[in-house]
Length: 163
Image (cartoon, rainbow, N blue to C red; front, side):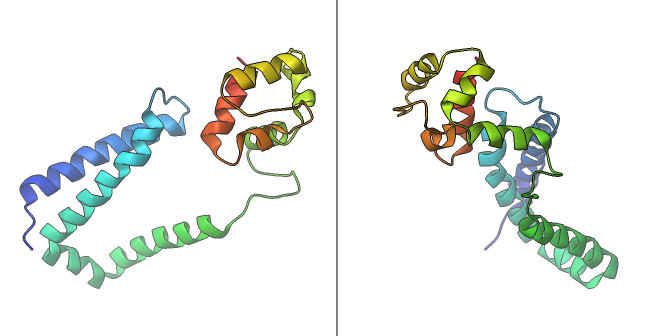
């Protein structure tokens, strides 16, 4: 199958620009609107662009697998990928991102314990969460039992509580 550089290269360049910009914004917590969604979903355009670009330049691409320096560079990234897949955050509460640990603590706390942090009575939080579409019956429920495991739902509930 013939793949044209005329579209493979611009697809790669355009998607790289998009991924770089949205990735940098997310890294510095300056993303807004749908940046994260665009980064995640249009990342597939970059994958397609890179594969198409590699296919269109297959002869040149293959030569990199014969160069020790190129193989070493690629190997470093494969090692980082493998390490990042198997390294777990510490469970004993030490180390790691304190913001993530604090969020986890709030999500695992009963709504009645979160209410004083939000400066509201538990009944008000229950009403606000129900109004936002969450099925919550009692202030003894943990926030994570109300939101489930999906991070967007968890952040939506946190936004409702700490508005």
